[in-house]
Image (cartoon, rainbow, N blue to C red):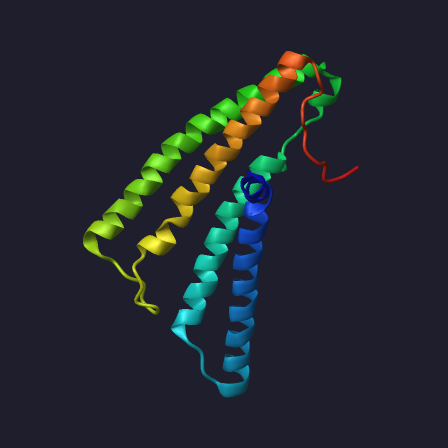
Length: 170
């Protein structure tokens, strides 16, 4: 049970670290190869591109978890805790609805790619592995939104202040 709690707490962090290190290391090697040896590979560009895509989608899920997406919250300072919680619940429900639709349509692209067996130009690996970044990202977003909704309903019921995440500028 402790392992699952640790995964839930740190999954996005470790995935973000993995893809970020892969992106930076590959880019550094490719710059060195291009500048020193006057040679570059097509697979390096693909690894960097697809690492960045995974990084973006996993980062979006991490931002949902921490309630760190950009928002204008000037009015939120003047609202009571119950109204604030209701607004956060409404926003999460709208985002949940959009994420479910996006998950369906992004999986459709993966399905078509798998059906026709498309591969990447440089790595010659099935594009399914790279196209899965979008449905995986939306699945993580849906999971984190469900957790956020449960947390907000709990705080609404108990009357505690709603979790607002960390502020960027204070």
